[in-house]
Image (cartoon, rainbow, N blue to C red; front, side, top):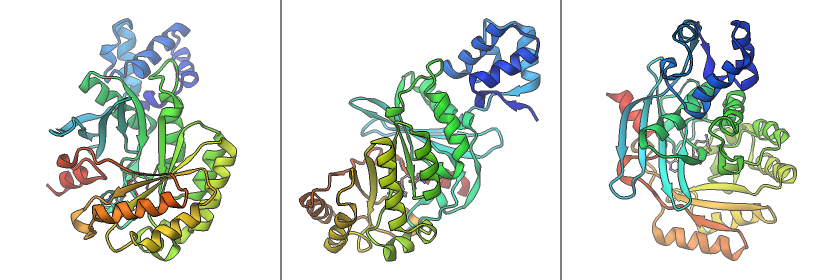
Length: 343
Ligand code: SAH
């Protein structure tokens, strides 16, 4: 088994290079090729001798993402990638253009164990975790292909990031390294379905990222039906962890709420939700649910969403309705990977 060189931080890489009998400055050069320039092949390291490149190839692998398919929305330039990994598995990433720059939505796992009933990513189950390098290479490959610099990252693609905790933490370390892609932690969001022990572990790290919590229901009855994770940690436990998180980091939490017609979108649900979030440093993001063929759910109508928003706002809850981007290219939630597997 060759070692995963791109998942190493600088200290680890330096140890490897020194133990090969190479001078210390080589580690800096190689790290820069991998992390800053995101090369996909050792032969792109033009200031490294052929001899050393061959030695590197014998011992290490650069796990990268090959573009299997790319779809670009005709409406808004949103680009969706289906990437093929070294073992033939597929993952998805989406690049969106906003006024403030480019945002990429990256996957953290191949498939997902969480079983949310509205989500396409979980239908075919869980395959494996992504390595730090594979999460990072999604950013690298998209930047390279589009010839842009990505400034914002959301860990909202396929998978549950807190279920792949250590690899996601290493990814965050690498992507924010000033000798790597040097992104600001403040420009990164991590979304969880409510893995409460993971929220406490994350809190300990005191990172300045934005925590996004997929709430999607105002009470346990509805939430346990749509999100199995709620049977492990209920809403009270989840919101307690969120309050602790805000206390520790002073960061506002963003709550995601997919509006599903007739399931969680009544006036009563809005009032109940407002009651639960009262007094929290929170923001609610309403998203008309993406209709995935297998789930049978329908999105709430515009009028329903307006009314729901009005109730939350009148209760003092900061609320926005998420704009839909890339609606013509299935730009969300594991739908492309799912199609690929069906072929
Ligand atoms: N596992 C993490 C991150 C991946 S999902 C999480 O659950 O937060 C990213 C977001 O998309 C989550 O808020 C998720 O609940 C939401 N989502 C999944 N399927 C959806 C759908 N069909 N329509 C709208 N949002 C959906």
